Length: 134
Length: 134
DNA sequence: CCAACTATATCGTGATACGATATAATTCAA
DNA sequence: TTGAATTATATCGTATCACGATATAGTTGG
Image (cartoon, rainbow over all chains, first blue to last red; front, top):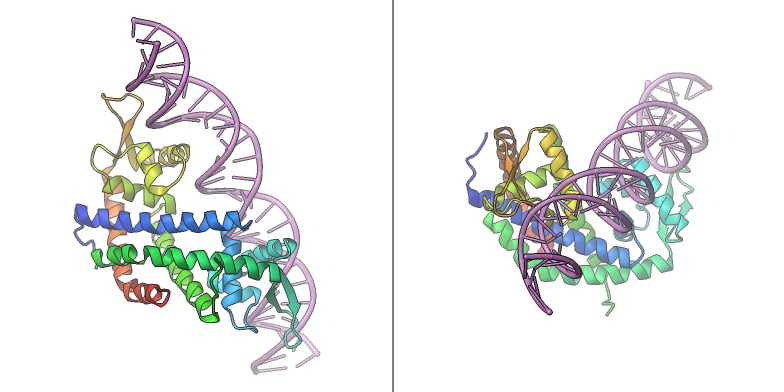
C-alpha cells in the first residue's frame, strides 16, 4: 500500500501543488478585481456553461461540489448583487432556473478571457509536473 | 482585450475547474481520513519537500502562498497535534526549523502515495482539458 | 391520496486566513 | 558602535463561508 517515496517524489508533489495554488491565487485575485468572491466566479461560470434549462441551484451545487444549501446561499448573494436572477419554472415549481444578468455576462466574459490566457501560459508547466509524477 | 468566447470555451473552462475541484475534494477527504485539515496536509508536504535547512515558518508561507502569520498559526496547530516540532536555529535566533515527527512522516507517506496514484489516474483527463483550452 | 422523496431555503456554528499590531533579532550606514 | 530600518515570527479580534440540522413546498409512486 505505502509505496516508497523518494525525496524527488515529495518535491514533485509539492511543486505540483504550488503550481495549482499559484493558479488559484491568480484566479482569486482576478475575481476580486472584478468584485467577485472566488466561489461567485465559479458559480457564474457553471451557470454560463450549463445548458439553458440546466442551471438550477442543484446543478450549481453539483458542479461546485458543495451542498445544495450552500449553493442556495451562494446564489442568494449573487442575486443581491444583481448578478443572477431566479426564474421560476412551470414544469417543476420547486426549481428555479438561474440566469446571468448582462452585468454578470460582461464580468464573466472578461474573467474567462484572462483565465484562458493564464491557463495557456501555465499549460507547459502543468503538463511537465504531471509527467514528472507519472 | 475581451476575446470572443464561444459556448465551448465556457464549457471547457467549467470542466477544467470541475476536474480541479474533484481533485481538491479527493485530497481533502483523504487528508480528513488521516486526521488532517487540508492546509495541514499541504504544510507537511511543503516541509518534507524543503531542504533540511529551509523549512521555516516563512518558507511554508511562501509555498502555501499565505501570510507568514497565517503559516505561524497553521504550524501552531500542527505542533499541538504532535505532527511537527520547532527547532531553534543558532545562526538566526528569530527563525526556527520545522521538523516532522515520525507520526507526521508516516501519515504524509501514506497520503502522498495515494495522491500520486490519483494524479496518475487523472493525468490524461487533465492534459486533455488543458489541450482543449490551448 | 398519502407517504416518500426531491429541491430549495433558513439558522446557528466552527474553522481559518486575514489585517492590524507587537516583539525580538538582525543588518546596515553614519 | 549604535540606533534606525528591516526581517521573522507571533498574538488578537474579525469576517467569511460551507456545513449540519432542520424546515417547507412541491412532486411522484403505490
